[in-house]
Amino acid sequence: MSQKPVDLLFGDLWSYAPAPESPSHVKYPKQLSHFIGGQFEPGDNFFPVINPATEEVLTECPAADAATVDRAVKAARTAYEKYWRPMPGRERAKYLHRIARMIQEKARELAILESMNGGKPIREARDVDVPLAAAHFSYYAGWADKLKYAFPGLGLDGPQPLGVAGQIIPWNFPLLMAAWKIAPALATGNTVVLKAAETTPLTCWKLAEIIQEADLPPGVVNIIHGFGATGAALVNHPDVNKIAFTGSTEVGKIIQRSIAGTKKKLTLELGGKGANIIFEDAAIDQAVEGIVNGIWFNQGHVCCAGSRLLVEESVVDQVILKLQQRMETLVVGDPLDKNTDIGAINSRAQLDTINELVQAGLDEGGIMHQSPCKLPEKGFFFRPTFFSGVTPSSRIAQEEIFGPVLAILTFRTPAEAIEKANNTPYGLSAGIWTDKGAKIFAMASALKAGVIWGNTFNKFDPTSPFGGYKESGFGREGGRHGLLPYLDLQG
Ligand code: NAI
Ligand code: MG
Image (cartoon, rainbow, N blue to C red; front, side, top):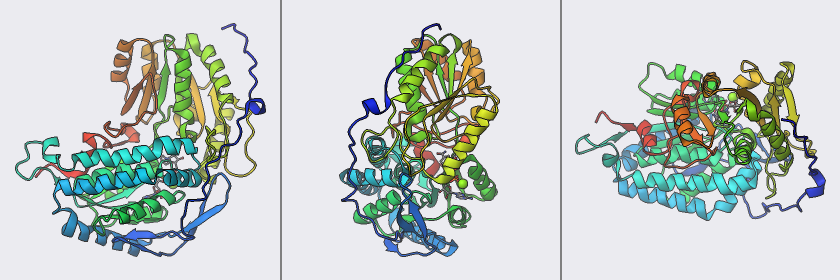
């Protein structure tokens, strides 16, 4: 393309007046606690909880040892036998609806906590994480008394719960992942021990408070904190019937190995390297917005991120030009500011991973494009970045970066796009941008990805099943499918 790049002036000339959300009314203790058997208990082995945008210590969090995990599992077992299993579905539904309503009532507080602790822009926490978390509880409340209808033909009793579910979640969507895990488990009559992620315990602690206030029978939901060792103790506890894990493929494999040969059921939602495919007949400006949303939503800490962009060769120069200009308009900074598009990287460790992979991208000959935006002096920040001239076998095209870094590849035919898109050990998400509906359907049926978006990206809904192929894991969360991992259909 011969069009000369237009020099658009951004940066300070066009900056907005600051519009920070005040955290003044948000309260949390100096030390968090585990929530076991309906009570908060002090715990020990405290570690600091950091605000990644300021590097300040927000609070301290206890790490549960094996004995604490055991007490949580016992509380869940007792609650299962005594309260939850005998309770009719329509009664369980009332509790789920109550949790949903209370999340809505405390939406602002939850959004601020999520943003302060995780680094994500308040706009995303407010408009995505919190409302979707409430929606998951409402949606699964609706299924609680309809399980026989959801899975008919299983006799008078219908499908049965499994028992105690051990659930381990990551730090990229802490409250939302807790909702994805807890809501279907409770709707199907299981009780729960959930381990929050070590860098982001705050909204899980708050959810425990909501659950206590919602007056759930003690032990139906237990929320504990800690590192990988706590998660491993939960996975290996002999009285857990089901494990649900979201996190790295590396840990997913460890979990799968460690429960092999047991009767524990397992769902794994692991990493991804989603292909976002732009055809020349796509509405390019809309596609650019989709690329932005695909890779820069939540700083790219998204398992289904559109982190590999596949562009039809005839429009690649145009797409790169528009993307560079759009990228420079993104506001990077204080996550609590309502103007912020890209907040802080969740932890120093994750920032190190991103830096390492970006260096590998440069070493392998990729061309780096970065926004020249100013970064805050403190905190863990990374500029929105994309690489062109990337070869399909390079590390940045193959490995999950889990940061605001996009790798651009090109293709000439739909067949080549399919081959390149599927050339990854992962298979979580994909996006297709074209004017032709038929092309979307043809591509979607050839792509090995659990979630495929047409002319949009990163859209979530509790009614829609979500999950992976290959090393992205197995089992589905959301929708009627999301009930299955928590049910025994043998009768
Ligand atoms: P991770 O998989 O180590 O952590 C996720 C959760 O698993 C945390 O709650 C952690 O405490 C727990 N955990 C760690 N080791 C465990 C074990 N042996 N047994 C049971 N539970 C264990 O992920 P990490 O180290 O935070 O991030 C590493 C990479 O993983 C990221 O760079 C990203 O590529 C990927 N990741 C993918 C996520 C996804 O949504 N699919 C979420 C988080 C990370
Ligand atoms: Mg890890």
